[in-house]
Amino acid sequence: MDLTERLISRELIFKGRMIDVERDVVMLPNGNNTTREVVRHPGAVAVVAIKDGKVILVRQYRYPINSETLEIPAGKLESGEEPVICAQRELREETGYRGSMTHLGTFYTTPGFTDEVMHLFLAKDLIWDPLAADDDEFLGVESIPWEEAVNLAKSGSFIDAKTILGILIAHGRKV
Amino acid sequence: MDLTERLISRELIFKGRMIDVERDVVMLPNGNNTTREVVRHPGAVAVVAIKDGKVILVRQYRYPINSETLEIPAGKLESGEEPVICAQRELREETGYRGSMTHLGTFYTTPGFTDEVMHLFLAKDLIWDPLAADDDEFLGVESIPWEEAVNLAKSGSFIDAKTILGILIAHGRKV
Image (cartoon, rainbow over all chains, first blue to last red; front, top):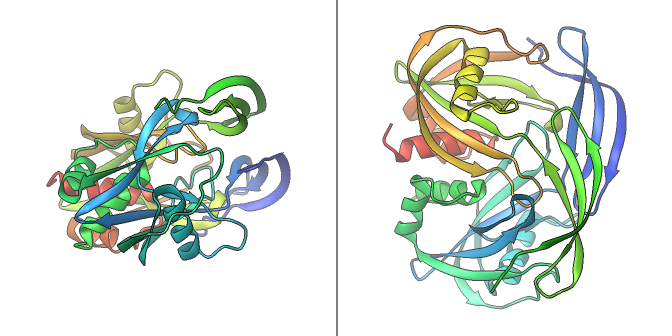
């Protein structure tokens, strides 16, 4: 069965600094029409960075959820930027380290309403090589032992999906 | 250090069927102002459902990414709906089964731009008790052996974040 939905018409609702929003009328497989609300996103990277048996995490305030979170370093792709280059840049900006990067996977964060794709990397052999961060980012850097991080991910103690996912995928690869 | 960003003014950009979009001016910890683009979402559930040693997955077309995906059953919370009730409803609508539900965790799917929260459940002891699905959802139901699903999640073969996350968390709990 062909499940594809076909574009009938598109309305651009919002062109933002980070996201665009569109509302499309589409034809369903049964021939009926419906609307789909879509958030267009440039894509992102996230990095599981390990130094001396600890994973490096960033503490930050996330405005959409009005909470501080502890997350693996991450950030948005700039226009035309290769994911591995972005991963190195974001790691340097957020933690001060660069590392040898291994691609662990690529996935859609929440494909029901956005095309945001996330490229996940492992960073090892870290060396100190800081890069100035975005001027609207305020971060604290923390490290926790790898086995403790794996247990926190398994027990649901982190509240950020990519952080749980990154740690459990890296663990599954026997990092 | 207090990392909180404080609301200065809010502009409602879009009130949709599934999401709302706002653009807020906020004050950063250093006293400067910036804008934050936020997608408000009602929240969601996802269900790792296991029957006869297999996990039940749904194949569907995801319009925002223009691809078919294989995902664990999931759906949006209705207004005021308890997550466990929503999980049972979505499982029945999408697969025809109901089960005994165990909460595995709650996390934010992508807190950089949305408040979407996802409640993850394990469903076991499944019995056939179907419920009519949403009239704009077209799904195929597939089952794969649990150990194969775990290996696919570890190797990055699924492209949907909650599916990888759900399977790896359930695996970590020795389901």
